[in-house]
Length: 337
Image 1 (tube, rainbow, N blue to C red):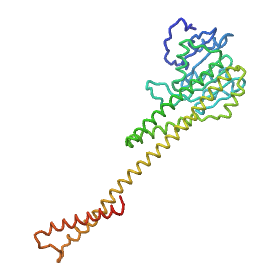
Image 2: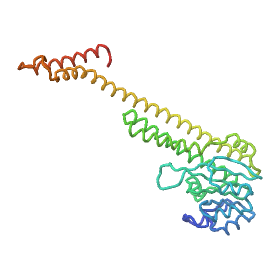
Image 3: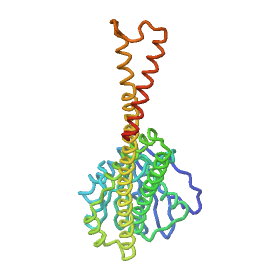
Image 4: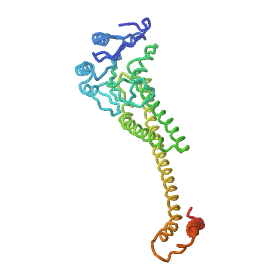
């Protein structure tokens, strides 16, 4: 184990053994662990606790979960599964939860959804994911900066808080994007705004599907947390869950606003289509009598007026113009436009 207060941190690449990173917290100081032997040795010690962050796409991580003695049998499959339903449960004095997170990548936009599975007991906290976790990376950096925890319960509550804050950042970005789309609509940029709004609506619906909390079950866990939660830890857990519930409510507001903007966009497009249709109708009404005259004078029969007169063409044009002008004036008087 390495004392992080003395050793500068250099992030290790993801290992084939499935351990993304792991820490042993003892005497208020975090130490980095490398390899399964170091993790198991730290868990076996009587002091401190261990935070183990796993990559579930690695077989060794799944194999370790399947035989880990400190994980209850009914939770082993859950901890290594891939479902994304947000939930919080306790089993045999331990805590298990699945929470929505954003994938960590170079692109600063929060658009890719992932999930983090959390297991907590009195001596061990396991967080597991299949895609790089933005929240867990943020918390790792805070640990490297010297952040300490009272115990595993404090770490679990902090994890849920950070996960909620990360999702809240995504919701804030959605709100900012909706503001930009609203500005585009006011400026008449319907085509571009329609495409952007469609992407936002799809992302918001997908995010809400991941975040849908079974609030009654979650608050029952908060009301009766495992024994390793003291009063302060229980209060922090309730605050974290309530904050996550607020984020869910904000996301519902985003979906409702996106729906209203879509309806406004549809109304603008319908109004524009009606204006274009009105213009075509007026042009049709004006040119219809003119077309009738050209059709009559186009008949190759005897008796057509001005057929043999030198100014016949001019008189015909005057007649067509007059009829068209009369139709236009009549439509204006009848308030068709």
